[in-house]
Amino acid sequence: MVMTRAQARAKYADWQTQLPPDTRQMIVNKIMETLMRHLPISAQEGVQELKKIAVRFEEKIYTAATSRHDYLRKISLKMLSMEKKYQNPNAHCPGEQ
Image (cartoon, rainbow, N blue to C red; front, top):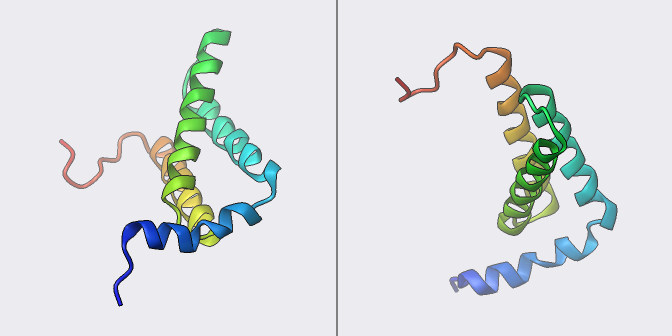
C-alpha cells in the first residue's frame, strides 16, 4: 500500500509534538549566530531581517522534515554548507560561473 503525502505527513507529525519547545528557538538562535558571523549588518533593522530569515529557514526545514533526526540532519547540513561557503568565498559550486 502506498501512502499519500497527507498520510505520510500525519504519520511523521508525531515527532514534532515530542520536540521540546525550546529546541526550535535554540536552533533559530544558532542559525542567527552563523548568519551574523558571516554577513555584515550595521543596524538593528539588519538584525531583525536576519532573524526573519532564520525563522523562515527553520520553519521550512521543520515542516519538510519527516523525523527529529531528519530535521536536525537537514539543519546541520545547511549550516555546515554555509560555514564552508564563507570559509572559502572564492570556491565555486558545480554549475556556477
